[in-house]
Length: 306
Ligand SMILES: Nc1ncnc2c1ncn2[C@@H]1O[C@H](COP(=O)(O)OP(=O)(O)OP(=O)(O)O)[C@@H](O)[C@H]1O
Image (cartoon, rainbow, N blue to C red):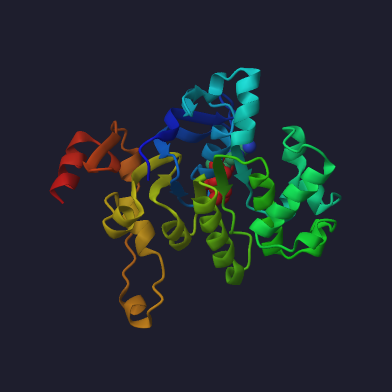
């Protein structure tokens, strides 16, 4: 991992329907950084705010407060030309490849949409060549470029979604639960492909997932979310090997173990969320180098002893 930050998120707050009776505080004071060339995994149960963070970073939602910096540019205050570059550099891979591909468009036109918008092809032939290269890159047959999405399986459609994201040669990708809609049998293939492409194309990912084993496998560092807050951040090995926050401990204790004997002995740990609702002020404390936990000063001192 290089030391240069590609993305900095500071004190981000976002509420849907702000000020109304149905207000939902989706992100509360969230801060984290992503370094160039790393995979940062965001895990947490459904509704914890993962998708909202991903979409806010890509400027699809506007937060009430906070800062987002991408390659030293303030994302929330970009000029039109900065925004155009940002829209090329930062891409998204969606959860449901079925819903995210326009069924009436040929694969080659879906993949080349960004190439056309950003004028990245010299001519029609160059466009075709680029699409063929992308199809091969994601493990699909280049002769299938004139087919339609319905002619492909779920896993193949997600490969098309990946090719579409890569077409504009991005630097950063928000992958929002890219495998959750796929058959378990092909989830690993798609994650392996994403991992290979990340290395090969020197990409940085924000990888959103609630499947903890996949996120551990692909991520360099992990942020654990609950109720709109990031509770713990650390390297995958640290967070999985030495979880500190009671919520992370509980989350990890719920993962089934493939070994039958170990599975029988597994003790799920209950979580008492009063640690989040007692009204005390909590900030991120570095308990171990690079391993941060949302806590009061007293809790942090206890965690450090532990
Ligand atoms: N457009 C919206 N309008 C109102 N509330 C929303 C909207 N989008 C999300 N929410 C709410 O914001 C909270 C966070 O949702 P979000 O989708 O970010 O969670 P998530 O962790 O990504 O969940 P999932 O894994 O189910 O996608 C939830 O309470 C959700 O109901």
